[in-house]
Amino acid sequence: MKEIEQKIVGFKVAAKNNVTPFPQADDDPTIKRIEERPEGSLEAVSEKIVYSTAEGKQKVYVLVSFMKVEGVLDGKPVTVERPIEFFFPIGQGTSEHQWISATMRSLSLAARGGYAAQNLQDLRKVAWDKGPVRCGVNAHGKPIYHNSEVAAIAWSLQQILYRRGFLDADFNQVPARYLAKMMSRSEESQPEIEHAEPEKSPKGAGMAVVGECPECSGDLILRDGCPTCSCGYSKC
Image (cartoon, rainbow, N blue to C red; front, side, top):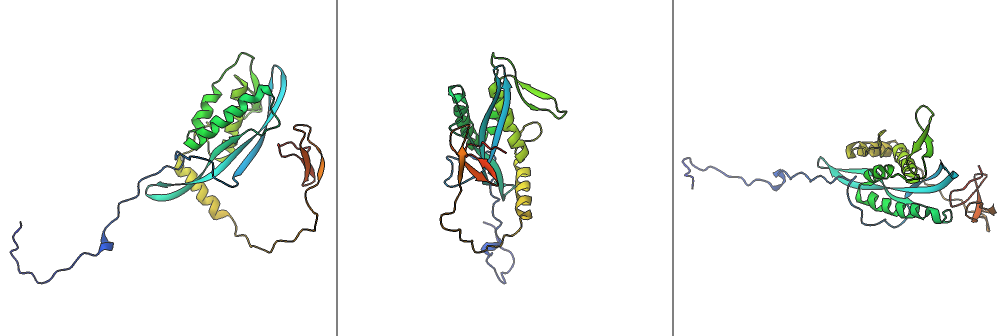
C-alpha cells in the first residue's frame, strides 16, 4: 500500500462517460455469411448470354440478385452491395442445360458464403472435349474463345459483376472499403422522391397478353410497347 505523505484536501469520482470505449471489431461485409435468401424482393440483373459451340449458336437467360449487407470496418459501420443469388429461369433449358441450374445453385451458396469471385474464377478453368466456345469480345472487338460452355457462362457472369462494380477489370473482388465508398456516394447522389397519391387505374385495366413466347410458350406482355416474356425473351 502506498503511503500518503500530503494532506488530503478534496477528492472527485471519475465520471463514467470519460471512459474510452473499446473500438468495435471489424466485420467485413463482403465475406459475412448469409444463411439464407431474405424474404421479399431483391434488386436483380437479367442477362441474355449468347455463345457459339461446334453445334451452333446457343443462348440462355440468367438472373443475378444483389443485396445490401452491413458490416464494420475500422470501427465504423458500413454497407456494401454484393451478389447473393444466381438464377437460371425455368422453361428455357433442355436436358443438356440441367448442369446450368445445378451450377447456379452452387454459385448462390458461394455468393452467400462470400466467395463468389473465387468460385467464378474456378469455373473459368473448366474444360471440355467439344472444342472452343466463342462468347463475347475483347477491348479490341476481337472474339473471345473459352475452354468450355461452363467457362463461357462464368465469364459472362463476371461481366455482370464487373459492370456492377463488385469485380475489378481482372475479375478480382473489389476491396470492401471501396465498395462501401461506392455505396455511400450512391446513396448521397439519389434525389429525394416526393410521395404523391397514386392514381387509380380504370376498372379492368391490366397488362394485356399479346401472344405466346417462342422460347418458353409463356404469355407475352406488352411492356413499353414491346412484347416481353417473364423468362427474359423480348421481340425488341
